[in-house]
Amino acid sequence: RKEVEQDPGPFNVPEGATVAFNCTYSNSASQSFFWYRQDCRKEPKLLMSVYSSGNEDGRFTAQLNRASQYISLLIRDSKLSDSATYLCVVNRDNYQLIWGAGTKLIIKP
Amino acid sequence: SAVISQKPSRDICQRGTSLTIQCQVDSQVTMMFWYRQQPGQSLTLIATANQGSEATYESGFVIDKFPISRPNLTFSTLTVSNMSPEDSSIYLCSVFGGGYTFGSGTRLTVV
Image 1: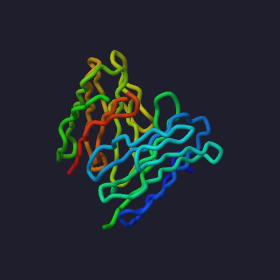
Image 2: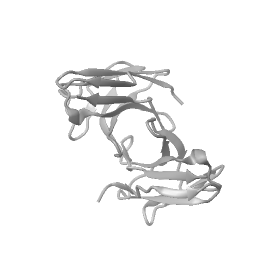
Image 3: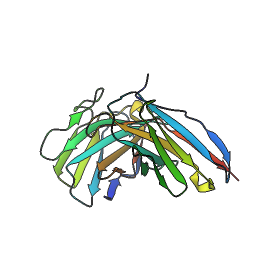
Image 4: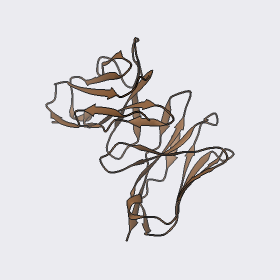
């Protein structure tokens, strides 16, 4: 089993819809969780950190479920510009991160 | 967050040759990280570079193949040595500061 697993997609979603995807992790000792966004042929960029209590940033909501060992990302009112690959990142120890392979999201007009 | 300048952005190299990738950070950072991302794959950590000490390599990566320099707190290089087509990938440097910031990546094609 991979340390961090994501559904590769692609998720094809109409503009304006709400989309959510999950990421499961295997290391119960993990403390830091992030969602990154990667556009085609670009470097990953931090979208948001994921806090234990859940957090929201505009149209984006991130949640952590420690009991089931997954994090989620919810995107409301999706825009064409949200089309990208979303990478789930979990720490293994103090600084070492484990990256998911990403979920590809395609927003259609 | 830090701003990283990475170069070259892309290169096409002959097998058997070496390529050195440079990353310059606009602030001093203790640790810099070098990643590889193969097409459709997740990022894989190659090594962690601390200033003034040997880089720490992950399983499957060795210093002879990927020598790293870290002469000061704002600069690092990664060399991909004796390249083969299997080394074709995107190479990224990264630093941590409230989340990881990445260089723009080097797209390497070995022919």
